[in-house]
Length: 333
Image (cartoon, rainbow, N blue to C red; front, side):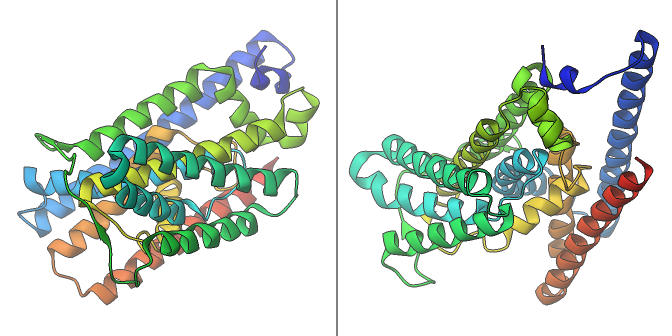
């Protein structure tokens, strides 16, 4: 018996069908809204810049989105269970320098595995601190972010401006898709299938929706939350591996601010900021929309300082809207 069905109690079969129908309808409406926003931005971009709809720009757009998209997958899983992960970008940076530093000595594969293992360990630290240690997730992951970013500079022994360069890049291109883009899309499909068709996926939604009820229903909440943070750390580290594939370098300061951008992207995609609600496909569309805004501003040559203002305003607006929506739903219930 799944965790979700254990938590739900409906008076009769007809009520259950009605609730399921309402959930599907809300899902369709949410997907339609995101789709409309995506198409509207696409049309606006094509009108403002003739280069926006070109194959070359789409390739660059998807390639740029892929790394943030992998971080957003990690963030999505943690937000789904009612947490936050402010360490995703720092773990990516640490992973990138581990790969870049060790690949010339042990090979790219072993270096990548070592980087992902480091991410899993750091994610587990966040999970244990926020569950067993009862440290608020934002504080726990902020601390882990400091550890990861510090270790990244220890590995490089370089200044803020000097990356580690490596040879033999693994980036390939098939049409508008690159290695990193294909990896991001494949991970999205795998996670979507896991959340939709496995007991674990349903339990993650249940934990985010009502942690106390999940415990009463017999769901191993602590174990699943630690596992989710660990997976998020591993995904963040994989993002670092993909960054090295894309850029042929490891950079200890890379990704500053990406943790907030990953949150903004998934919230644009309809993810509930405080857990229990969200669709990973829609979340990734939200990340793509966020990157499209940045890409369009570059194409129309908006001053970079103004771009920072616009992106910051988008983050505040979407997160604030999600918080207000959550508060409104709480009053209704």
